[in-house]
Amino acid sequence: MLFMPIRSKKEILVQKSSRLTKKTLRWLIVISSIPLFGFVTAFGIAPNAPSLEQIHIEEVIQDLSIPDFVVETQHNHTFWHQETIQRGDTIAAVLGRLDVRKQDTAAFLGAARDSRAMRQLRPGKTVFAQTAANGELLVLRYFFGNEELFLMEKVDQEFKMSEQAVELDSKIQMKSGVVKSSLFGATDSAEIPNNIAMQLPEIFASDIDFYRDIRKGDRFTIVYETLQDNNGEHAKSGRVLAVEFVNRGKSHHAVYFESRNGDGGYYTPNGESLRKAFLLSPLTFSRISSGFTNSRFHPVLKEWRAHRGIDYAAPTGTPVMTTANGVVSFAGTQRGYGKIIIVKHNGQYETAYGHLSRFAKGLKKGSRVTQGDTIGHVGATGMATGPHLHYELRVDGVQRDPSKVILPTAPPIAQKDLQDFQKATKSLVARLNIMRNIHFAALN
Image (cartoon, rainbow, N blue to C red):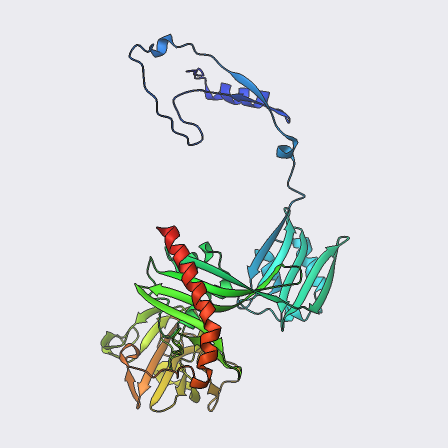
């Protein structure tokens, strides 16, 4: 074995700096019993092996030629990025997250000042950008409206903009994943697009509370569509076509079906509708800060009293959904509720949404609302110590615990559509089964 004699730190640094050149590096090679590059070698020691003092110590210096490509800069490299549009985003904010340099951001905004697409930045949609290593923007694509393409390209150091309709081809993708820390952490690991991942809580909104019910080890398999342009490049993600979500050991299935009259929705493979009359929660993601109880210490009144609803802690401005179809019977201010909306549903049911910061634009008494519509935004009006939503389910005018009330479900597939449903969803269910089995085999 060969050992390099130990030298001072200063001497070693001087040696390294004096022998490095652009084309050649001088490496000090130490051959020892320490495994290199992660390889472990088993060896034995002979009984008559010499002691360390008897081992000849020699410094070995070897010249290694460095290929030209190692010392080349990456200035000529380009990269494709994508960024999902968030609520309240401007295109300048999106360019900032894409790390586009300031001078190109300014030039882009000037070239796009008359763009229809830039006035239609829709949350959940994706912006695709090609940039150089130094942040120079080369190409930006954004599909908006009814499959229209916004295209900004840099030509001779100037941005050229075009907006045009495009024909997109649909392709089916299949992905699987396991929850280790969070749902979106799992979908990111499985490389599932954000807008596809966001559809899961909507599909199973009546069966799974995606804030309280998700557990480590939950798994999912998704079949979804992606849309590509004529060049075969990814344009946008479409709709979840089929999904299996195993939550706390219970398997939930959904397949998408659109009837001949154009009505579409998600059903179990047996044709039962997944759309219940009421959603489990009026917020997509939130934390329950106070449950339904007959005795709670009121944080404002400083006394024990009943709490006839559920409080969901969420930031001010978080969208609030109506949990069922109905008609707004009240939209205004009521004592401790602050700004509140009351929705009357079919039969004896009523829901209330209190402490709102504001109502949805145009919403008023008599407005018809559909399950999942945004009717207001979380706030802290009335008797509230912080931003949250106070939600009530009322049956015959009496507040009831939503988790303990058996609520009606939507009707199943109509008999006249059953044959079409079975034909359309058979292949989707088969894809789910194949992908699930492949993923399960990989995990084991």
